[in-house]
Each structure stands twice: as structure tokens, then as C-alpha cells.
Image 1 (tube, helix red, strand yellow):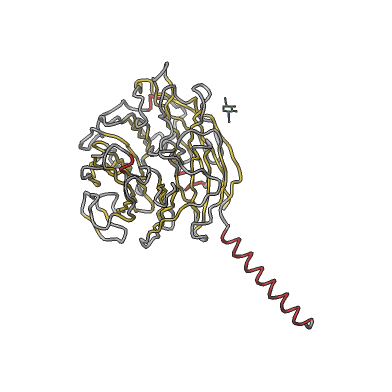
Image 2 (tube, rainbow, N blue to C red):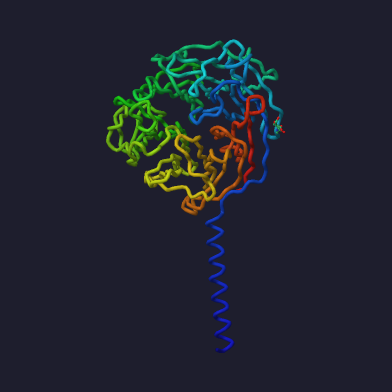
Length: 446
Ligand SMILES: *[C@@H]1O[C@H](CO)[C@@H](O)[C@H](O)[C@H]1NC(C)=O
């Protein structure tokens, strides 16, 4: 072989190697964690159930303007008696100390894991809270003024009105109500979504708060059961579109969950479309044409109300698990901006196979990344994994792990969106008195 030939081979190999390197780096260009901090918010409640950190709390941790807010139950006096508490702290331009208030005029006593707290903040700076439901009349209270916009120096419960059992200005039904969720929309109005009816037989309703008039109105029933009920993964507004995905339950028995459904709205829930953009009649039922996206039979170990999010490029993501392959796996459901769905098992080496009915996870998006926050119940951890659009969302990489976890992690979506910080609300394991409710912040580099 001549020197020239050797040199050519060498050059060729080098260029191949460079291509290879570029390919690898573009496939693994997931985000990384640059800082980790945590705060003990409170001792978790005394009682036989979890009331802090359930997947359907929308939201327990949220950011509005430069402040972050956290809603949680804290033991009032003795076993099974709890107060709704609300914390706030400045998060920009620098972190401030947490300040807390307790609503001592309402004692929560029902030891039932449905009876959580949800929080929403409307564009006029009012903080809305709804709490303590399992097929009971609405419990709702709202701040007296726009205290998230014009920040008062005092942080006391006197800034809030009393507990109400209807939404001022709107019309019912208000009972039997479960799973209140809040979602703000682009013009500063706030939507509230909840189930009326029971597990295995219920409908989902939307109401809208106007930041201009300070009044609520009834947008109407948008999901209707057929002797069954939809359990939504979330209720997500992104850039003028409202996304909802769900599974349907036939009876109160979770093993009757089946299938993956999806719909979107361009007008804040008044009218709805199937994924291909075709309009559907309201209310949507499980037999509405074009609504079912994936067939997953009953007894597939789907857990209702897992997670979903949308990203700034018009993509929609959901997280739901099933054992359709024979083994329970977490799946990433992706809807491209043009309405095409795929469902791909999340390859997370080292993550335990989720036992039936194990804690639910969350999915969040930042830039071209999705972040899956996955509880590993057998190992009592919460693991944070990320994948990239460039890697087809199959290049899952572990970013972080929190130990001693016994609950369902929640994400501050607004803070991630606005400040690029992954802020989580979590519950520790262990006995009452040592077990904390915490907030963890993960700084991210893209
Ligand atoms: C949270 O509480 C635990 C137990 O009391 C303590 O060991 C830990 O240092 C606390 N963490 C923070 C960030 O204060």
C-alpha cells in the first residue's frame, strides 16, 4: 500500500468518526441538571391516607409573575384534622424565603385520597382554591383582590373570602363533585374542570372565570359517560389550544380502565375536535367517532389520571402505563403538531417495573425536550428522565433521583415554561413527624 492510499483511508476514517460523533451528540443532546435544591414545606399530615401529592392535583405548585405558590394540607390539631395551607416565595430575580398561611376556618377530616387541593391563578392576580371533594358539593374560595399581581407585604388568610359551594356568576350542577382542576388560558381567564357523578358513571364540566368581570360562567358539559366515566390525564392549555386525553373506566374497579382517547379545542372548551381536526359533537362520549386513538383492553393495568403536557412547538405528550406487551411499562404518547400519534415504551434502564396501582408520574416539556418524572415505588425513589425531539423521544437519559419518596410528584409547569427550572412538589416516606412535604428545584441546562 502506498502512503497516499493509507492517508486516504486515514482521512476517510477520521471523517466517518466525526460524523459518528456528531450523530451521537445530536442524539444525546438532552438537558442536564446544573443545580439541585430542596425545601421542607411541612411535616406531612397525620392520618392513614395521602392527601398531599396526588397526580390529579392541578395545581399544587404553580408560579405566577415572580412568585411561586404551594398548596398543601397540614395537621391542624391531632389525628385526621387538617387545614389547607398556602405558601408563597419570590423566585425571580432571586429566591426569597417561603411564607405560609393556614385557613383555620375549615377543618378537613375526610381520610380519603381524593380529597386533595387544587389551585389556579387568573390573569387579574386572584388565587383560586378548591379542595376536599369526593362526590360532594363544591368547595371553593378565592382571594379578595389580585394578590398575585399586586403583591401584599402581609401573607394572611384574611386576603381570602370564605368557602363557597358554587362559582359566583355561573350555574351548576355543583354536586356530586370530584377532581377540580384549574388551567389559565392565554387572555388571562381561568378555566375550572371537574367531574360530576361517580367513578364508573360521571361527566366532566368546564367553567370559565373572566379576569375582566371577576365572574364565572358555565362553558358546559364536554365529556359524558355512557354508564362509565372519562378519567383525564390533564387539562392543558398551550398557545390557544386546549388538549385533553383520557382513559375510560366502566365500574369503580380500576381494572376496567381501557383505551386512550384524545380531543382538542381551539375555543377554550366550547367546541371540540378529534386529532385530525374534524369537529365532534359535544358532549363527547366514548363512542364519539375519531376520539379513541389507541385500543388498550380492560385489565391492562392502566392507571387513570397519569400525566400529559404540550410543548411550545405544538406537540402534545402524555404519560400512561399499561401491560399490553405482557409487562407493565410506562409509555410516551406523542402527538405531532399535524395530529399524528405514536405510542412508545419509555426505555429507562434500572427503573423498576411498576407494580399494579403504583404511584403515578408526570411529564413536562421544555424546548425540544420532554422530562418524565417517574416514581419507582419498589425503590422508594422519584427518577427524572429526559428525551429529545432530535432523538425521536427514544433517547431517554436519567437526570436525577430523589430518595425516600412515597407519593406522586407534581410539577410547576409555569415555572418550567417561564424560567426553565424544574420545580417539583413531593412527599417523603416514613412515619408521621419525620415525613415531609417538599419542593425540589432542578436547574437545567439545555
Ligand atoms: C428537611 O428535614 C429533614 C428532617 O427533619 C432534615 O434532615 C433536612 O435537613 C431538612 N432539609 C432541608 C432542606 O431543610
